[in-house]
Every structure is written in C-alpha cells, then in structure tokens.
Length: 325
Ligand SMILES: Cc1cc2nc3c(=O)[nH]c(=O)nc-3n(C[C@H](O)[C@H](O)[C@H](O)COP(=O)(O)O)c2cc1C
Image (tube, rainbow, N blue to C red):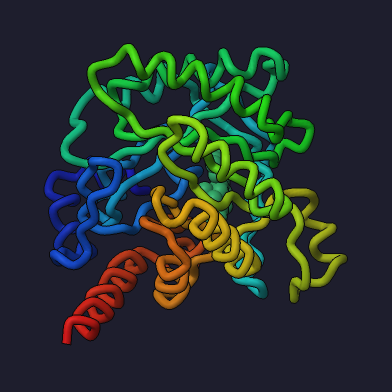
C-alpha cells in the first residue's frame, strides 16, 4: 500500500503536509546525527528498505530497516502475524523474513535523500552459530555506505530454534569484527545492540557493561517478549495463535524498566533507543523520562494509525512549551 502510494507523483508531499510535525523543540542531535524528531519506526516494519521514504513522509524522525540477513530467506509459514486486540498487542513469528542484502542495496542506492536510516542486522537461520559473526559482518560492510547507524540484533528469536547470542563472549565475537572494519573507514557509523526484554536484570547489566567497555555506541531496548504474562486473552485463544513473540501494551512496563536500568548503570552517558509497548504519547514521555534519547514504535503505530507520530510530536511540543513557561 505504502509503496503504491509513494509511486503517485506528489503523494509524498501531501503525506508530509498531512502527517509531519516540525518544531525546533523536537530536534535531537544524537551520535552526530541530526534527527528532526525523536520518533522512529522500529525494525520489522520496513524489513527490506522498500518504504523508508513514505515512512519519512508520514512523520517519523528516522527509520530502522531490517532485520537484514545476508541471503534472502522466507521466514516462517503464514499466517505468522496476529493482532491481539484485547491486549493491544501483536503476536508474531515471522522468523526474520528478509529479501537479503542485495535487494536492500538496490533500494538504498537511489534517492537516499535526507532521511536517517538505521539498519538492523542479523544472521541467516541456516548459518551455524560459529559462523554468525561472518554473517553480521557481511551485512555490515556491504551496507556501511548506505545507512546512518547499525543495530546488531542479538534478541530476535521468533524462529525459536534460532540461535540467539546471549553470552558476553558470543556477543564480543560478533561486534569486534564490526569495530575493526569501522576503524578502516572514513565515515563513522554508530553501532548499537538490540536486546530482549526477557533478559534477567543481571544480563541487562552485562549488556550495558559491554556497551561501556567497548566502542559500542548505544543500546536499543527492547525487542518483543516471549514471556508475556497476565494477558486478557484466554490461554486457549493464545494456544490457537501458536508460538510467537508479543509486542505492544504487555511490554510497556518491562521495556521502560530495562531502559531505566541501562540509563542508571551507564550514568546517562550513552544514547538509548527506547522501544516496546509505546501505545500512547504518555508512554513515550515515560520512556524518555526513563532515559531514552530516542524512541521507536511498531505496535502502537498499528493500533493508532498514521497520525500517531504527529500526535506524539504535538504532545512533546506541548510538554517542552509548558516547561519553558
Ligand atoms: C510483526 C513484527 C515484526 C518484527 N520484526 C523485527 C525484526 O525483524 N527485527 C527486530 O529487531 N525487531 C523486530 N520486531 C520488534 C520491534 O522492532 C520492536 O522491538 C517490538 O515490537 C517492540 O515494540 P512495539 O511494542 O512498539 O511493537 C518486530 C515486531 C513485530 C510486531
């Protein structure tokens, strides 16, 4: 739909007029990049970089494409995304469907414009754990010139049998080659780690320490959960949907808690992208108050519709203006 719209001459201009909110109080400078507002669209929405221009026109301050894997892979069989209305949530078991690196390059090569694009990177499902670092590096080096920052996805496990690097050693094996490659480049690309809300607090601290001890630039917290509790939807109904990761309202509290924990442990000295269950402008304000520098939405966008970024932006402007008085 978005791609079709984007192909109509003038459509993006109209979308921008309708949905984009500009104001100096919304602007942020984070890791050397100038964001026109702090609201991004989270990974998984534009997996192959097909619609980032349209998402920009719809008022997002940045777009995180991906997860991009080196080779194309179909992900799990459909249906694999379910709207759980009673809980303002989505269950998904897409399992890293990606059209692969080459497709993304061809999308990003032209008309890059002034849009801030992050790229979430991962490994192919068939790649054995010992070769995971090579997969991440391959996507990283091939897309280095096309995007503004990278997110190393060490949290996405909706394929279930998928290997997820969780120990300090396995994460270091993935990120060190990225730092080495970056050292040889003229342009600096920030590298962030995207973590799961299902980590224990000790593991969140371990991830934070990796950020502090290495040239990592920040953390994206959090991905969807596989441990949602207290859902209004019955257990029987959830069983019918089958396995998957849950995003949206059931995640709000934990995502904010994780961001606060990272912020406190790192003394607020690193950028944190807060994501998870931001369903209202108030949720976004709470996430920013917990220490997030930027935020991302996915499920909240699905439930609130196209005006959601504008609504959040307006509430942030109001908040800034009332503070200034
Ligand atoms: C359908 C769907 C697909 C997703 N795909 C990815 C993905 O490919 N990579 C990733 O890092 N996160 C992915 N996510 C997780 C989101 O980026 C986000 O971290 C999570 O949904 C929590 O935010 P939300 O509650 O605003 O949706 C996906 C989420 C959904 C709902």
